[in-house]
Figure 1 (tube, rainbow, N blue to C red):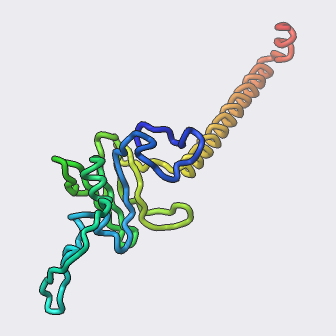
Figure 2: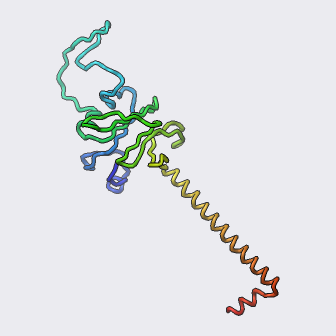
Figure 3: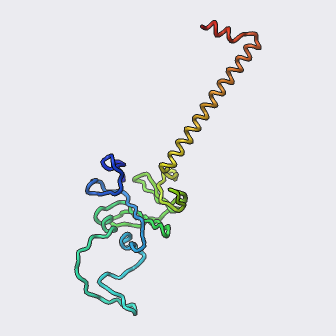
Length: 208
């Protein structure tokens, strides 16, 4: 989501998102595909071409018209995202087949985008989304992940924490090295003074 706080009411974690409460339509929707929900999630782009619910398929393959009771059914996800909310980007990912499909609103309808190395760039957000092979929360597999303009993956909180710790250790080590170098230079200066017949302690007494 773009343009809303990270936490709900700035207190609770967002376990769900209710548009009529938030008042902001998402710019991107990511749907995790499940077996049997392709028609719901992919609409006309579903690979399975099923007959309408008012038809049955006979054993010989012929379609038989049947009488169905007219019932008002709620719109499917695809219809909601495309025709009601007009969400600019719709992303569908199947963790069973590792297939990523991305659709963009164009002319009032979704058009499927061609991916580049399993990635898609969204210039309006200056963000990209793609498939990343790695370990997350102890599980090694392909994951959906955001990346920046340079193609670098946006770090997770755990990765960011490790990076900050590594940077802090590196900074501490550099400061230690600088202190050791300064001490070494001081000892070298004291040694040269003594070799020249000058007592360094005398210089300190004169300054005091």
